[in-house]
Image (cartoon, rainbow, N blue to C red; front, side, top):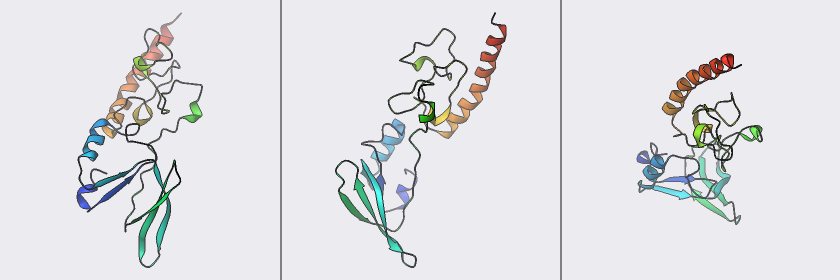
Length: 167
């Protein structure tokens, strides 16, 4: 979004949540807030597109998720970015997650005190690791995820070595 804004007169940012804090880093939130041509439509979702195959897109209809009220925005282009919510429901009951569904790792574990020797990228289940955007407290950046991916290899080797030397 921050990279698109300088190229357009107005950028409408539609988010399903009340704010950006659960899905973006503070740095990116501040950067978006500082852009004068960005309009945030919180607690909303795109419910319809208007236009035709010849003329293209003319408008989108936004629906407010709490009151159901629709509003129409005249625009010619739409960029969808869907997926900032973690897809971790399949792990319910297996590993600790935060209130937003992100996987808690290492010393950040609140509900379950980490046992001695818990590794920074290890979840509440011994031997299960999480990296990247799905991890609570991650910076939600590709470079950070790549770094965590490299770091977790050493942590997995350490965990395997500890298990093989355990009585």
